[in-house]
Length: 344
Image (tube, rainbow, N blue to C red; front, side):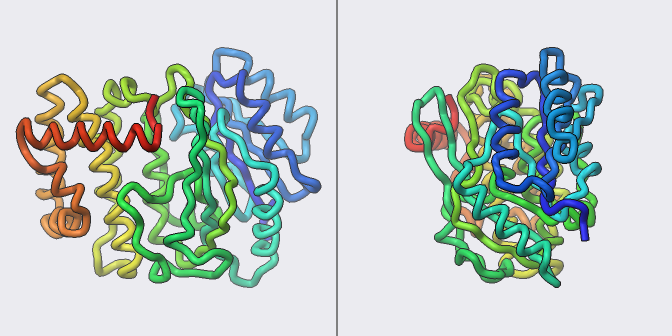
């Protein structure tokens, strides 16, 4: 049995204004004996390192700190996962936090799995957008695709909505599943959370959905990587992540039908996100990159390309060429962003 039930990995870079809220939320349980919090100070230049060490000194049996040269979000996640001793591992970004009420249900379930003969490989829970720019919250739930509190396989999963998929915030992996997948996130690369929520999935054989609003996802602060203008400026990073996801995509024959269709949906969603921000750019070169990205997918696998366009109507829209196609993409983005508020 692992030394701890859960290892929370907290990638931290210049987050002295937010780290305490995050770590305190992870400490907010009646018993922390089987809880591990690994703060990875990723070469911070503010007071993050000192604050992290203060928590480790105050809670030496719970909080550990890794100080490393800056390696980006992926490098920080890699370091934390490698150091984790918990049976389960969850990434909690330092500017996010955990809901105290949901935490009770969450930790109780994980402890039951720690004692089980065959613990589930993945625990899925809900997350809430805490958008300070829009001054509203929006919770993403999965009760339409999973039956709650049951031991499930991918073939028990219902069809996702167009913009619905599992993000890093929803996932708690069994640690050995992540390690068995061989996943190593690229360093100095943005948006690696898409890879984290994708590559290990073929090693997940069983899962349970807890219909609890556990993760509070803080967005809208200045300089955050999900802001519209920043995503356009970093669209090359999205292209890189998409390429890595294509390489990690299993063939139809290697996984169950349920998992293949879900991973196809997720990959298609990321292609659509990337296509949107390439289209929103005013640079014609970016429009060419969008067409090239889809052409490269087709060259990589004609079957995968055709499956994506057959399963997802939005994928067909994204491949419409010219000014008309770009207009459709821009209109779709405007409507979705107004409704969801995922970019400020």
